Image 1 (cartoon, one colour):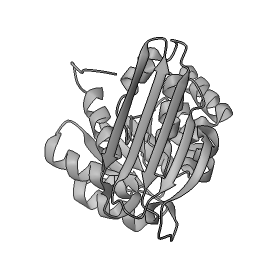
Image 2: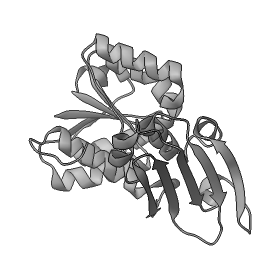
Image 3: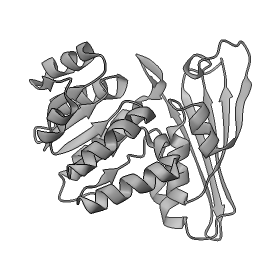
Length: 254
């Protein structure tokens, strides 16, 4: 499988490092970034090609991995799908825009393409999807990160946001993709609280789901990427796992 990577930042660097040493059947062949030097760096590690021509990349790969930004999804995702190519969207917060999401789904259907969204920096999406139609009464996310990762310079704990996921992804587009992943999985605009905590060095996500099935909660304490504290290492590994499963004849979970 030939993969093109859109966005050559923290996630892409982890994906390249892991796949190059573990998965011979995944060919990271093209790289595209607004900063061509970042694309060239990753291309040199894989014997791939850095390009400033996005259409060239689409035409020469089987799938695009978006690891850039919500804005990049708006600009490039439709181009990928119109050419009948699949896309993995890491910036899942962009899909909280109902018009954008429905438009991309329609384009994908019309062109026999698929849109994949990894679980990212959290656990439990399989369970959330399984109970989404069972009269949920509560669905909440509490995210706690360092002030640095949230763009703040504060010395004590502070609640930066409390409201719905659709607003959270607008205010913190690089930090709270997990809220979108949960919302889309449980088919509702979940309640979100974002806390800046100077005493922690991890990205912590606590999820609580309750409904007629019962209730469950998960807590994930992720190490942030070294070169981008906004992003959890687990996000990159969720993309790697998805790529691996696309080629697998047997996989567990969905």
